[in-house]
Amino acid sequence: MIIGKDLEKEAYSPGHIAEVLAEIEQQFPRYFEAFKVKRPLPEVMDAAINEHVKTRDKYQEYLHLPSLLDYEDDPNAFKKMTRNKCPIIHGCLMSADEAMKQYKISFNSVAGRDLLNTVRNLAEFGMNYVAEFDDAVHEQITSHSPLGLTVLEDNKYYCPGVVGYGIQSALLHGRYGHAFAYRAQDAMWALFFLSSRRDFGLEGGSEFLMVRPNQGNCEQNYTYPPELFAFYALKIYLMLKKACADVGITLYPNHRYVYLHQFMSSVATDHRQDISILKWSSEYVENHWF
Image (tube, rainbow, N blue to C red; front, side, top):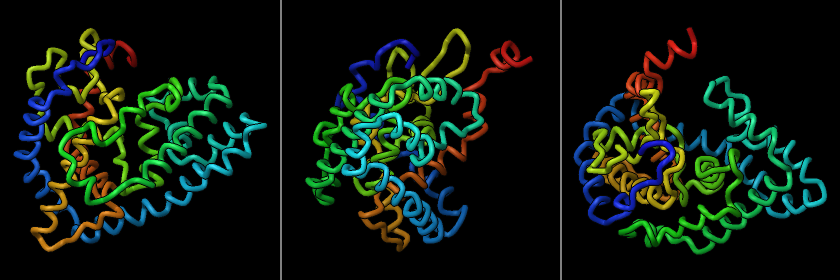
């Protein structure tokens, strides 16, 4: 997908999605084998759960609706608290990555009121979504629409430059690891490699990347639609669940997307050098750093 252009409508079509899933299903076994041999799977999964549990309490505290209401009279205090107490946003602000420079600028300029309204709306959405969530029904979903995540593109859940779907998914996944997949950067890169880097006929290239043709580099698609990402995440989780069952390991639904995040991170790690090359062309680096 070329930066500055909308995702092509074809990406939403059942035929296109089926083609992408068929490719992912074909590539999945070799990535699972690589995942399996790095460390014993039970050890890997337990470590992932333990790490998630450590931060879950922080997200529960951050998204606690009564506490959010306490900041109504002082939204600037909420912004300060967010900087220090929200794991994903604190991590972004403390990152030395050059790519986070614009995020820091956006956070510093955002109004506390806008941030508070966005987070409160997300907290309400998550609470209502999970109240109606059914594990069995969820795993039987056959298209992206029933996931009910298109609403997250509404402005009430979005804070320009500060809270997009990446942060939305981190907040929701952080509190509800069974219901929401984490659309981390590694997850988008993993989709690109699991789908064999193919564009499947889309004119703008792979839907999982944001391409800068003039600079000869690209980035993971940070604008990718929530409902499409969630559907692919669900289908890959089901592949992971079956593959683990085949080797005698049970994945429990209360940590569904915690397991998936670990696997997707493994896929991206296998391609870390490829990612570096794709993100920074030699010409771009020379022009900007030397």
